[in-house]
Image (cartoon, rainbow, N blue to C red; front, side, top):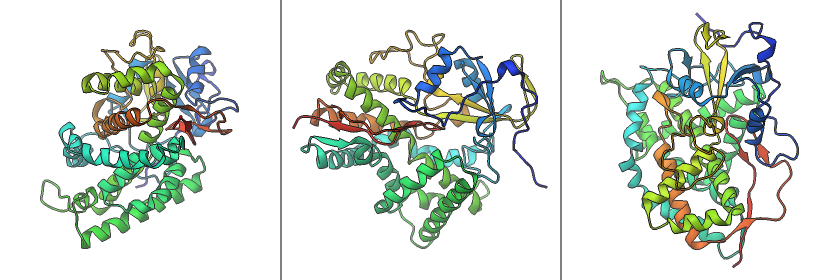
Length: 407
């Protein structure tokens, strides 16, 4: 029996809850893609609204609703929740399945990404950071994204997976299509391309096992001692592949863009470099204000949610940048307070599908900040920024970030 998870036409949506909004559409002249979300607040749109764009979906605008959608997997599923909707689409393990099924691969991966395990990676992250920064530090300028932010997290991920790092440019192009394209045929071809790469990698690791995540997945067994299904392993690696190639890159780009335009922030962060706990507090605040992901869920069955009728298979978008600026939760939410002590941001999600790589992401940013601010303490945005540089979608960011400094 074939199941369809495509949403129905929005005949159930009242006109007053309709808003013309496309998260992929960044108007000309808008330099920060998060601005299109903040503009919704300025327009005072309904706190739960519906847009016909990208297959049609709801948007939750309040922190409490976003957190509830993250946590309540029985009503808001991650299974086939992608926006724009497409079938068939990879059922990415463990993110794309709900409890209790998601625990199989989450339990397998969790030990690799604990705080202790990530601390053991610190020297390797430092080595990579030094190697990258030293290539351009004496030059006085760089494209931060192309030369650093895309290189550090992606190269680290490829190293952990056992993928050849010389293919990094190819993988970045694949990731760009996955997160940015709204063309159904292009997205299907993109998914098949990723599966082909992973299948080839797994086949090689079967013959030549190594100390890497790909080998761990290939050899993974269930509680019955039997090897886990090959397709489930491919689905897990698919998630790791796309998750490891984009989000941290764009978070770093936002953070360095903020530092480049805010001398006081650079000074404050330099003062914290020798105090790890204070630096971590500052990074948590930078993660709060610079959240780049707008994640989605699928409504599992018809329901009345706080007076709004949600229909089975409706999609829901949870914009973290909106949740992290909710004045009901954060004091002075638009102020970047690098000493903020209480910080309940949802940048990595909450609940059973909270980002399993969050500790690695933080460690990469901490290591990068430490070396960069010692090596290049003062820097600014280049005088000329590229046109049409910002992009939206499930992950927001910039195509380029030219920085300059005095040598």
